[in-house]
Image (cartoon, rainbow, N blue to C red; front, side, top):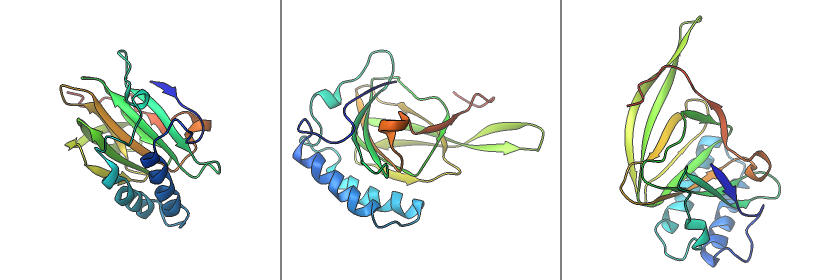
Length: 188
């Protein structure tokens, strides 16, 4: 995954994106529990998905080798970050969980998601796939650790773009991924 863009929204960002950042800021500043924050941020994100004037052409560029992360905004106090993930057909993440709450929305195309649960008997642990979902343009979901293990992929035939809002400073951290799972799992 490659990362581009500055620490905060700049002149290169669209007016709609600046408005979205302000709406997210107002929600995050309420200081509510993580799951509720993720849900409420999703309500703010949803009306902007699919809008032609949300992202610049550069923010919609993919990478032929792996999905690409464009950092759109990182709040100066580290309370949230907004990224666009651009996926070419067949590109996917590793199986992973997150550092913080997250809200995602599909801006273009569709994404497949396989969700997992970690089962441990005290001596060994394994992943069990619990659900497969397809998130189409306009779909929004939010979650907070624990219980956020998943793998995401472009499940369509064209480019997919999703917006992700994390309750973490990705300008400093670089990624929202807490752990990558390399345990035996059903990955078909």
